[in-house]
Amino acid sequence: MSISPILIGIAGGTGSGKTSIAKSLFEEYGEGEVAVIEQDAYYRDLSDLSLEERHLQNFDHPDAIDIELFNQQLIGLIKGQSIQMPIYNFSTHSRKSETRKVDPHHVIVVEGILTLHYNSLRELMDIKIFVDTPDDIRFIRRMSRDVEERGRTVQSVIDQYLKTVRPMHQQFVEPSKYFADIIIPEGGQNMVAIDLLRTKINAILS
View (cartoon, rainbow, N blue to C red):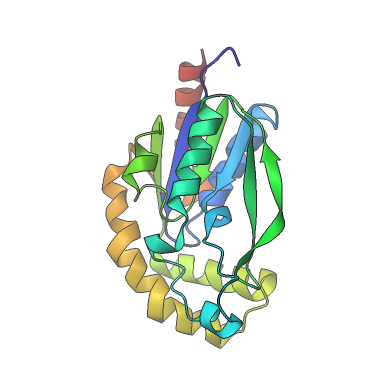
């Protein structure tokens, strides 16, 4: 690659609109220019635990992420190396045997609730973004996603939100906002903020 890649970190609470921003950038620059790396791919493999024990894990705590592998693979992409990114199965809380090959790109977008929490990741980032969306909107979006896409019951989503999601957001996710270069209210709906972000990326690329 003739240009050093730009690493953009996008953090924010569950359902805040991080994915919408990542998709907007992907659509703007195209598949050949942008690679989107999701924090969710790096959940630790819990296949050594029983299914019941896996369901009891706190997936919103920083320790749930294999930060060593996450960091190592991002460094590889920055150095122009291809990586084999894990594929996580949310139904079984384990990694699939297959992986997804990700080649180097000019723009690397890293998105997830805790991406700005880890100092090792922040040090790699050229632009750090926090998506700030009201709690009620985020909860409704999470409810819809987990029920429709992950086969969860309404009650199980509520129980998990109260037990781990909300307290972990307050303890780890919300404080990471202060590491952000840019705070975007309302996620992908904020077209002014997205346009400003595009301008910044274009300035760096040029």
